Image 1 (tube, rainbow, N blue to C red):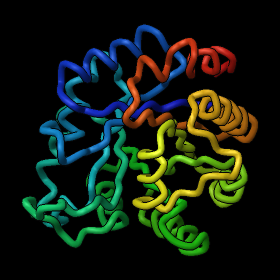
Image 2: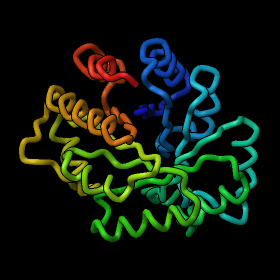
Image 3: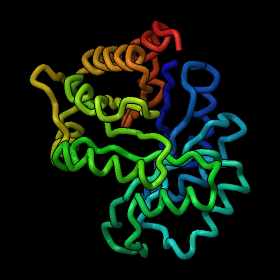
Image 4: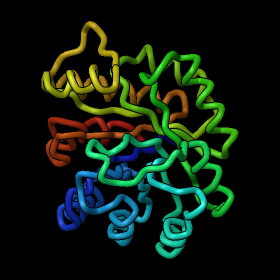
Amino acid sequence: MNKILLEVIPRDVPTLLGEVSYVKNNFSQISGINIPDLLRFETRSWVAASKIQDIFPNVIPHLRAIDFDLDHCDRIIEFLQKHSISSVVVIKGDPPTDMSRKVYQTTSTKLIKKLKKEMSSLKVYAAVDQYRSGIKDEFDYIEMKIDAGADGFLTQPFFDLRLIDIFTEKLRGKEVYIGISPVTNEKSQSYWESRNRAYFPRDFQLTMDWNVKFAKEVIGYCSQYDFNTYLMPIRINIEVYLSENGMKLILNYYDF
């Protein structure tokens, strides 16, 4: 059964609670909420996750590996246990631009291994960045994360079904969430191309229609090949993205 995660930004707790309540009341197809850990906001991902559990029990905070000293992880582990947070996503994390926060040499694989050792019941997802380096290098990194104990993977958003096909060949048999993110203006596309080195196909268009059509193709692909999807409405209002003109018709179309 194809499962769908939705990323919700923790801008502030009241807004977060409102958005998650809207999703819970209107979209039974969405099985989990993902909370990214963004340093520009005051609320850390795991704290935000604890705030919405009563509304949406399946909540998955992101943990930035470079923020944790492997010899002093007691506080985050105790927090996850205390609040019965059963799943996390481990990413490497980018250093703060002003270096105002202390960071460590902790890698994703090391943090995954540490968390699985201390909390064997914790489901730990790892990230796949299909644009980070060459395909072979990313495949090797995936294997390292599996060896470290990763239970599944979430990918960066794809914009080309052909590239999804290449990466899912490597990921078959794993619990994988294929990223989908709407890109509807030149600034957003430039960000993905320059910062993340994302690839956009020749037929790509900066319209919600194109993005919704592509999302339908991805969800159909995932349903056919036993993968899951991860909706990432970055810089787009969740209610607009999930409206009748957006993803709602697609979510209602598929039997999840």
